[in-house]
Image 1 (tube, one colour):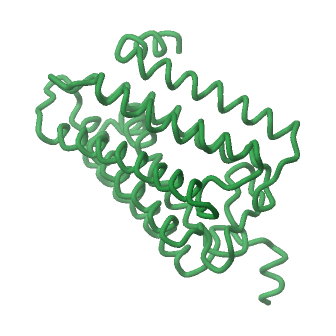
Image 2 (cartoon, one colour; image 1 turned 90 degrees about the vertical axis):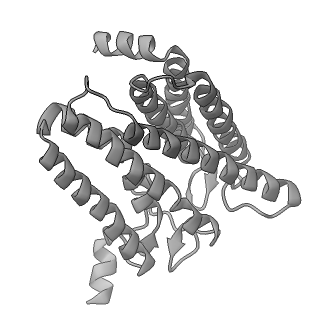
Length: 262
């Protein structure tokens, strides 16, 4: 594990420290969720900053690792795009959480509406930049990388980009639920609805292909065909959970809700 940290820091010291800061913030937000009672849509307000900070930590470290393989790539430009834009997102989300107010879907004032739009632009810019990195992984040859691992990186970026933009399905509706208004069922920290469709499920699954597929391919599968199969199944899972949510169905329905249906 120490070797991994040292190698990651060597590959991209800037994103290594940014990811580390996000991880520290994530645990700080989690602690705040335990000692404060501020709520937004019936869940602790600090869960959302925790989720975004932790997700950004995973993203920053994953891209720090992968971008090292790219020849003649302006990594500093990408680093600071990620830091400034995603850093802004985390800051604004936590700022609003502290006030017990919405960050996403908040168009109650012109200022909040503008800041919400800026968050969408920030996330889109980082996603498009990451899509360009995916293009570079297709454009160049990487003779020193196992073929299965290279394809896992390529396919994980494709799935990540597609389901990152799935976030617009929520933003355009100002609602992550289908069948209710921003329902949260206190399902651990993710808060996915247990009663109606939740568009955040497929968003989460798709975005974290970036970490899961290359890791599983490199350490477990070690086979190109199996990597393709796993990537297809993983992408299909994200798609099916999206279809399920659009139909207004929760990922896991509460038992008492099932009994009502019966």
